[in-house]
Image 1 (cartoon, rainbow, N blue to C red):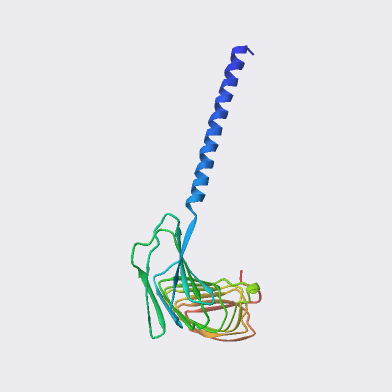
Image 2: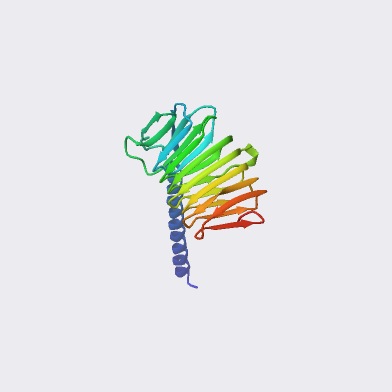
Length: 234
């Protein structure tokens, strides 16, 4: 091979290495910037005492047990934090909307002290991450409810009552429940564990999928379906 051709090939290889290094540098810089831009800031707002929580058209909401009532709003560090509109009437906390525009990324965590009895959800998406109580009721209207609890945190509900309609969807993961009662109308519930007692009524095309409980008392109309598995629901 001629010397000139070797030099030419070496030059092309050197240029290719420079281009590759520059490309990697740009990508790494963009990645670091992206990670930096995704840092969240959180603003804490104290809440008054209440026993009923009412939510309409709220998403990315998480419930956690606490010694006091307050709400955390988390947004990107460069975004304004929206101000929450709420009021208390007859021991019910009504959370309505925000006074200013809601940023594209917003996470809401409600910290609730003992004493909560009922949660009402309409057009909302709600996650229970940590909570223990003797009795808790949910009323759902076109909403999603997820219990994602950990036995290690000793989460338990002695008596859980859920009423759901209008294409609501309930998922209950690992937790300790003595008694669970469902009244479903055109809604679905999935229990990925076995409560000690399971009761309720299904109508208007509802569906309930559960692990075999110790005691069961369920009713359903001809349009609804009850599925009972011998082991954990996949």
